[in-house]
Image (cartoon, rainbow over the protein chains, first blue to last red):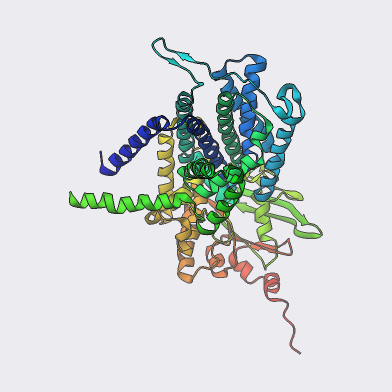
Length: 331
Length: 255
């Protein structure tokens, strides 16, 4: 194996060890935050897939909500077992997104942004308005938790945040691998093509509408899956969990992190969550989160328009230049 | 030889303006066919109508015997009618190779399941093979890893044609391929077009560069005010009184 590959393998192993050990060094409430963080990483990463086609939506968090409500209702009303209801919830989000794509993709750019916000609000207000089956403003309570797994010698209780964290982590990593593969595939290339020159793409036979729809549906499906992960963890969903304020947080993670790489939004999500939970909570300024996020957003657009990912890119370049070539020279 | 593209009584109206007004002409298979006319004659609109970018107000466009007017652009592309755009319209942020790979979209249709499972290697290798073939044809193989936006103007125009060529067109519509080129680049481009025709692709081009048009085209259609002015071989067009009048105005008799 070549040296760069070895280094990459080693960094991945190190990352895996950190991710496994991490919850054991945290307090109970921090472990819960870790679960939310893991779920949010899937939300922001799935959001990025849509941004590859150049469209930014304000309805993404509602798609997460569709997954959460869907899965909750399938278990409560229809008695579907939880793991299956989660898959169904995610698919529901995908199907709803497909339906919404027809009116929404008559628009582009800013108009699409506003249209997606309106579409999301309609869904959210339907949850608020109809007590049956959505539970009205108070939402749905006592959603079945993810069932315990009894292996005989060991019993995994998913009420414990550490266990649920591992479960969510496995799901999220799998999803990230799929998202990464889609981006690196010819489909991902076509997404980029649609983004940069939709007319040229269309002239070479790309069905631009279909590819925009595909990106929207895939991103909504994964957001829906993230929603189901949340619903079966906290056991309750209500319309306010998926309101525009949450959407702005997702946007901030994506913009501060940067969206040209797959790790950009993830870094944004981790850093800002850490900032929120460690710094703001310590200072007792939690209520000021929107204010602080707003300031960070403005500052990052002004001083770091390429996002945090650019810093990482520079570090990687530095390693390539100094560590790797240096070693090869020595050999 | 048979006609590959038949435009009959084609019209497009924008509000009160008739940009194209009852235009009829035919392109013979294997020809390089020029479409010329003064500014505002409706050449680019005609292109947009043929390629499906606009829907015609009336009239028909046929590829061999098949009606293609009113179809959406990617459907027209699937039939084998590929267009390029004015200026250097490229995926400037993507590499040269990726640009051409987008062009192979129709030959190697991406599959979602293959992408999910990471089983794309074979079809991708074929697509890259096709892309390299095309890049070699246009003399661009040295630039595969460069960003398209960083190429020189002449190379960008060639890449634009390479993207179109990668999708295996029957007829290629080139919108002002010689704009902004120096004489040397024009010569290279003319050579490329001759080579393209020799591979069996029919070319229809809108152009203002008369040296290129006269030196290259087998037949020329002249438009003025959205209508057909005349049609013929380059030599006939060059000396046609109506064409001279359309470009230069009527000669006043000196008294």
